[in-house]
Length: 138
Image 1 (cartoon, one colour):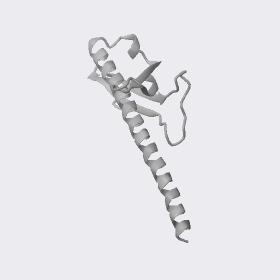
Image 2 (tube, rainbow, N blue to C red):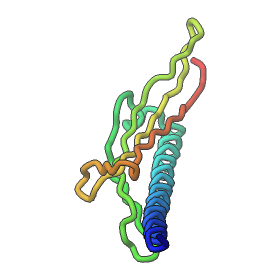
Image 3 (tube, one colour):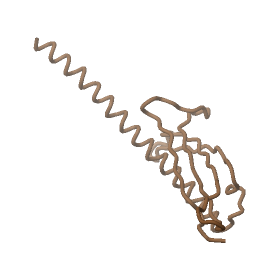
């Protein structure tokens, strides 16, 4: 009976270690995906302040572009992302008013080395982040 109990507890411990490693990997992946999205939004915001008519801020979809996150210690690849963004007008519910603003939504997808989507259930998540650039009345 003791051997059976010991075997069951060792199997359960192995599963717990696997889940812990997976959630650490997922947390790192989500964190670097959020940084990639934030960097693009900051870049687009800066571009909007300099020139709102820039091609990257035209209405519609843009990208994708590939972003690679590397380990600063040994240079190994930690994550690869495909980053795309969409730009839409911001609706104003007030009659006769128009906002000189753009709604930007960034979508970050994990990808493999060749650029194919990396879809491992429970491990890789797609991240969407939106912001509004502008907000001046016309």
